[in-house]
Amino acid sequence: MAKNIKNLRVSKGLSQEKLAELVGVTPNYIYRLETGHKKMSLNCLLSILNALDISVDQIIPAKSTQEDYELSEVQDQLLNIVKGCDENEIAFIMEHMKNLLYELHKYIKH
Image (cartoon, rainbow, N blue to C red; front, side):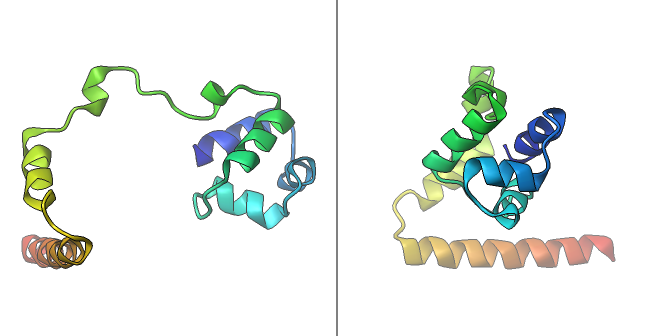
């Protein structure tokens, strides 16, 4: 979505400063939205749609097929592993998965 905002803004000939003025935010806020470093509120999204004179489907990519929503068998297995876990357990599992992947990538590169 961030890339779409920038592309549409540029295609309308607007600078970040001008879009920020139209939306009622700072240019830095627009920059952070466009680079994916900031999440926007619904009100901000509506203001951007209005300022760019576009519809929501032009800015938010649509999922086109059921396949896009389906999990692979491995993803489903991973989900089932953590389904009954509380937040602390999930955080613990994720931290260990990250460490395992880091070590795996290190091992593969050597």
